[in-house]
Length: 514
Image (cartoon, rainbow, N blue to C red; front, side, top):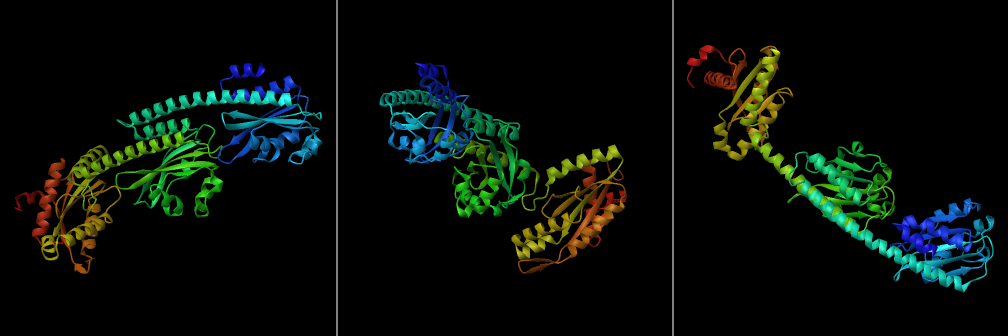
């Protein structure tokens, strides 16, 4: 009756188990109760609960019991587990199959019996009781305990069904929540964080994260992370990592494999570096899932357990897989949007800003210059005789030349300056925040010298020159349009008067025809 009441008043078996052990010991006037739980995948038993009378002092026996595990047929728990039947030991001190005999003798434990906790045909675990007296076998008591074991098993089975239903409902809610979060999102990183948190909490992960690859897969960064309150964050330590350091991980990700590591300590020899990194962060088990766009691997999502090995069931893995797919689609969409935005403002051949971005930056530079009483220079660079290169050597070599010229121009200016490709063979530069026009002469001279150096492209030696026109704010004009127009006039005068040189705009140039 006492066991029935305990089960009725408990919402989970974890809550009920210490009360069951206490009730059995007190009702039967035995001294110690131990619950052993079976690991179905390994077939071993570990102590999940223990109770003893307050007056009974057994520190060494308790410490050993909580630490030791039993395989089938080994010791009292292993024998009950293997036979699925109760077993009585009159005196454990004289029993040949009792590995804890030394500490039991030292702390005066003698009589013992164990019985299985069965859920149908499956054994959930074993309960064993100990007495400080030598106890003669009692078959009637064993039959009663077998019945109680089945009663407890029915309770566990019912609770597992309830928990499974609740978990299924939570699973569906979580998937729906994660999916809806990415239909429209204004804050991408917040949406990722909440999704990792939802999946991580439901699966009892200690840490959940997104890594993204960059530089053609040469490096990876932990871009997003969620962690449980009691788990230390790792994101700050996981930036700018060369992917070549993780060959086993990358091989599996590139093959499209879900990497499920139920026990990090058992990782294969070829994953030695990865194992070392996981153990450094106290990871006991992990699931890592590739994140793909339609054509390429762009990163991975991971979920770590820092508490237990093999903590996840098939349903958990399914949820993590769905989460990774949803996040992957969101990341791919964000990449596509970023690429579209980039293409709208950049030249596809050279990667330089295009006319649209040039105009935007020029407007910003002029506002800043007006506020801080500075100058802004606009330089238009037109390549001399570029058409001849295309006509004689072909457009492929012409394109390579443009890319090389873009690279050399980049080395002639400051970090905050803007170089744009605004026409087929025309480049435009904004030099903001100038104190003196002399700075412009220095840049123009660097460009002339840089482009005068021979270009060697696929066996061809090419000599290129340029004509440069320069206008200054506020000396020559105050609007973006007028500055560009007057730099253009100066460029054509430079080209008309010998090429391979630069000219500043002067008001008398307005009479010069292109």
